[in-house]
Image (cartoon, rainbow, N blue to C red; front, side, top):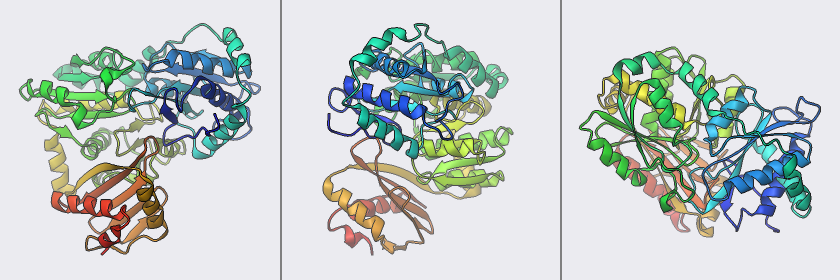
Length: 486
């Protein structure tokens, strides 16, 4: 109980019964309740006499309903108006509801794409995106003080919460269908295989795609708290069954997937090949810009491929780069600097629908792209963009965050190298880890905000240089890694 509650890149997460326990959820919920009464912009000072309207939801994970009830109890005990949501429900559905004025904030019990033994909580601020770093620190401070105090009072107050559970999916789908080109999808009636990975996208994302006019074959569509024993993270090694099903379609089927709470997406092209996150985001930006739905600007993370930036620039769009964590991109949407946002890990948002990442929206837009292409592989359009705007390859990988590597990362932030793998470092960004920019790409080393990992991101002109750059990054994180900086 003495361990502090700390938010990572996207909320608070940890192993259930170790980091995430009932008393600690009580304390965090009490911290959220106290924060909601604080004066201040963008989340504090609710407009209802200090009584905020708070949506409370959960995903498919074990004890999600119990933990959500504890959150409702703590919030109700603090005098806030609790709005229970019919759950399990995807995170983007709840975030979109806040974005469109259904509540002043939301608490979602979810550990997103983490392994089944994890649980956690995401807090959505008034603007419809994750709380800022400053707000997270305030919630953590209140939670520390509440750890020894919450308990019977909050549990008793659970009966005072509103028993009516709000159904948010239907209005969310109405907003989604108003954004996507349904007419084009209906004319083409494309075939897609949708892999829900046993998460909350099941019954929502496939429903959205059918409403668009696609023919949908669901895969792993049974919601499960154990996710069949695997992390519901849509990575290539976890989408083998999806790729096999796509190949069986003979080049006429697209594969789509979402993670555990459906805020992230993945794409398997019609030939069964993985479409990496950089290629996928470049296609989304190009499609929206070509059709006039993206005009003001684009917000991306510092780890995102420069191909995305070049695509946006070709359409005359301003591009801003931000630290990793979609909450930073959400703020760019709120401030009007951008109307779309995307990141390197399968996150995408369009301000008209929501300001937090939305895997369901991305899947709908890829279905629209498939309809436009007549079933041809989407990578053909990626190759056309690269020929016109400049080629390059991008990849991310990870290492265990052992103390030695973490110490090396801290040293690199204080004293970055001047050369790596024979290339001169042209610019250094230490806002989030260490980003080393070269004339032909970049290398980024940073600690994960959700798992005990160090993540490496790199971009280079070709695959051989990319592998050397990643190898140099791994060497830099070793005690004797200084040899790589030459």
